[in-house]
Length: 376
Image 1 (cartoon, rainbow, N blue to C red):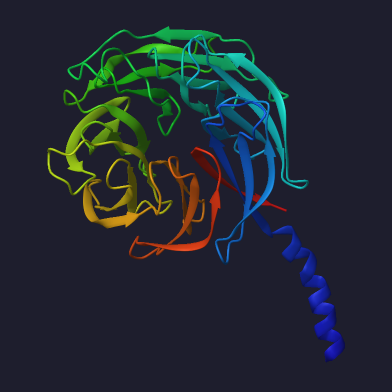
Image 2 (image 1 turned 120 degrees about the vertical axis):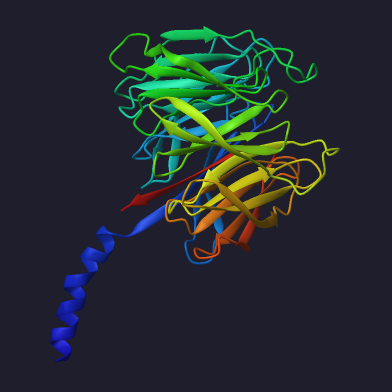
């Protein structure tokens, strides 16, 4: 009997190894000095929520935003952000076995202050948003993960009612529709969510669509944008008004069905809403508030896609510019830019509420968090 048990264990062990996973957390930052670390890599303990640093890279300036390839082997970052009359995007290779990150190459953006980038479904195209001058840069991606020179560049010149923040166009994100046939560009400076058709077979894949944009409320400042997993509803966080605009979505068209406050302050409060993400099961939406509140607003999502406020969770730091939810929905990790701390929360999958777990990580000016599970 004992021998049979031993044989069973020996048979089972290889299977356990095959299906085991490691979870890595990638953090971008404003380092303001190429000699300092810019991108950090941590391994997440899926039981305790503890973060352990495994790698980092320097010789890049202000890698403020990060996106990953589907397999997690390639990393792309906005670089040279907040650098006057400059801007670039950079590619890196990540080896999950050796837990190492290496630089591949860099390209100029032709625009100033790149803040957001995304890959198309084929991973042959990279789209970047330039905030300062309100433009979008499109790049082909080579087979080795290197970024080719710009294939398409579009510059916008609109403005809106807030003369301090909306003196010109400020593109803050590049978001694909669920089927990757459209691209949406929230424009904080023009109070528009711009829309382009996307054709990956063209040398200039952004194509004019109708309508060309969805108009937002004047002075609201559209910032980040996301789709519900069902592909029928979209959500835009509006930085200047501290609100989320909920849209029905179909074939490139957005129809607003709700606007709801991310804050519980009154209208005299100076809002600075930042990021938003939906849990993998589609039941909860989370939004970060900077400024006086420094919290995560928690909303349940109704069957029709509209939101109901459930409460707020302090981020235990200042300026939660960016956060991420892991693929299992178990963890939510926040980057507090001003206080320089990364905080890990465990999600209650039933209630949506957050509990602080693990160990805080302190780095200089963290601006972006991405989480990826890797099978071994």
